[in-house]
Length: 151
Image (cartoon, rainbow, N blue to C red; front, side, top):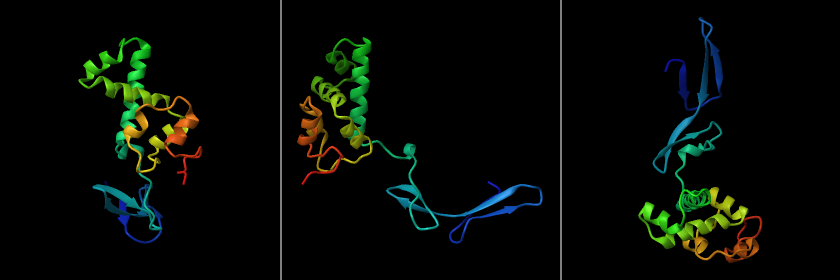
């Protein structure tokens, strides 16, 4: 790529070439973090990862499956959870647990999507027999309404 220059120190600068093109020089570094390249900005802070560069967590994947399977049921594409289980080649109870995730409180769903749940919580803790009331769900998961862990 012509016109691209990566330097490790200094301030960004723009140079105008004789043919009218502009060259932007940006001081960044590439570092490997967890097997992927990460941009380090001039002030030493890591650049924010792009959403498509981040792998989904098992909880996020389970939430997506639950919503997909519920949509299949609601649309009439399938008639029962047993039919989904046969199509997917999995156990009935697994389908049921994933569909349970669709009734979680919005702040719990947000915590799953932003990967902000406490590390000790597992898919089993969240998906097996969730409470119908959102306040009870939060109490069971030891979360306050603002997603902070209760003491």
